[in-house]
Image 1 (tube, helix red, strand yellow):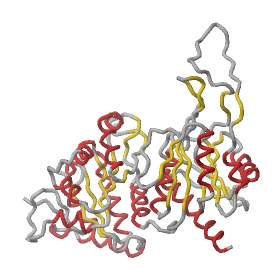
Image 2 (tube, helix red, strand yellow; image 1 turned 90 degrees about the horizontal axis):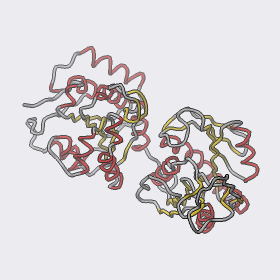
Image 3 (cartoon, one colour; image 1 turned 45 degrees about the vertical axis):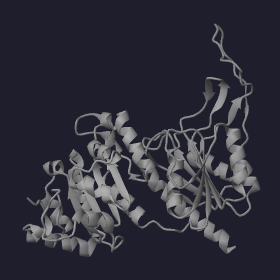
Image 4 (cartoon, helix red, strand yellow; image 1 turned 180 degrees about the vertical axis):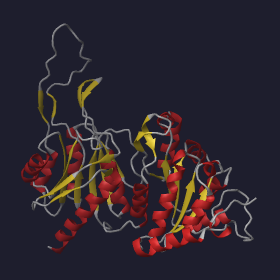
Length: 431
């Protein structure tokens, strides 16, 4: 039995007419000519895919929907077929009268395969090579980029087995759009919510229309939190997770740059296709960055580098006693200041994580360290602190221009940073 929507079903005339009017007057052609396969799994957030399909249609994309059987319990093929204007496939062995193997063609002739919501079950299938329904078989046959938007209960998301499967897919080159944090349908609160449709669509647009405006450029990115040892078992560090820096490195790679990622310890898997230099201390990072500086066209310094280190590192574990422990600290080298003093043709971008007087402190850092611009954020704001998947930043430029951005994913913030970087690099080239 064939489960389909769109042309294979009787579509209400007024619904189609209304969709056409919206597309004509309110749409744009940013995705014209792009073919998108949307795989929908059986999660409560499946209903949001109606808006995703609608938005993609307004951008003139050609959308083909594949649903798992359980997904049809949350939203009907009729709805998605009406919005996409294409047949919606559900069953593995669907009969269309077409001798071609439909899922193979979709997997090889589209521009991207987007799976949203991607359930823990589907992620596990893909990670372990299981192809027992139409959607997982399509993924197995895919020769196009695959993007996954995980969505599930917070405890399922945090399950180490699921995280292992997700990490494995990252390492294999699958693109992951991180889930949001918030209240969930089950009543729990945490990470696992499907991002809003506009965010999913924007991530997709950025990927499909990724520019190659950094082709031939070498971009060095620093990321993570440095560690300053106290003794063999303890160190001083900070709350940075490296997510912003890794997002910048990935975005620069996608725009054609040769990326050198100098990373302090994180729990992240580095993006494929970048050169990774692993460091621990601020002095390690100082050495690595200075060695590569002359070969770089730009440095984007997102790393949270320790300003101070213990004056003496104990050879043995420091034992507690009844009195206070007094640590004497000394200054670490200021990597950003040193880069500013040596700057020739490079564009230099700094970061400032502040808790007060955001613009004042950022402007002082620009002048003192000879930066082209700085990306500043107030880490006390919800959605902008360490460890989040979103950020709220203000970009402040050496010429006084200030660009404040709303809360957005760190991937989108990275694209905004690179947009400004490209303008500056082109100005340097013209000079």
